[in-house]
Image (cartoon, rainbow, N blue to C red; front, side):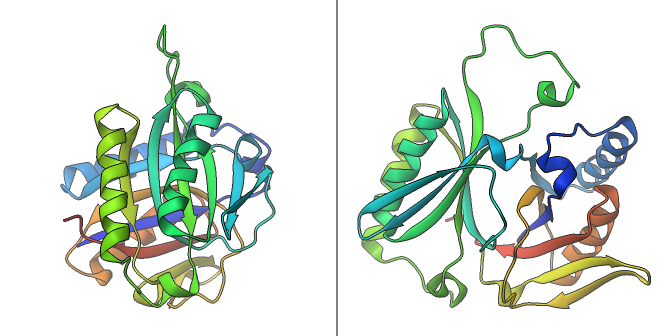
Length: 243
């Protein structure tokens, strides 16, 4: 089974702070442990919401709001990682996705690269960057209602086309939060509550994808993760199997 562990941002990261050596080392140690255990399937951090946009699609109309964002409905239903030349190109891809999905709210933010936080120089000649296109949970997605056969076919065509051109890098879909857990740091240590989650007001700052035999097994990594990234709260959600 595949799970995603997501931590939430705060005012410090939203202001553009760069992680210090101690935090980088702690996260590196965790990533190393996940890799050594053979369970790491992906990991990314996100830039501040001031560098992104929020798209609301309703009845065929798109409303674009530039960041920064105040936390509203921040529970994700799925995301795609793209490599494109501009934010506008990422918006174009998200708009094509919305034509398939219908009414949907989508956030687009840059993925943090090593050179964004001073860990490595930016490669010469690089004229693209990675963006996360994250769609928000809806009543339907929280009920676990699947896409229609036609929607699946259209999404498959979009992904295939943009994978061949090097734009589409990855897509993941989360199962309803009723199957997940929310972990919080407290004076008594890390505590969790089972889903469903009525709301999630905090923006996502980053995530890891891990394979695990059960929610309990994934939860052990979530406990280590929340301590490594020094977060107040993380969500653990099951990810749909890729056909």
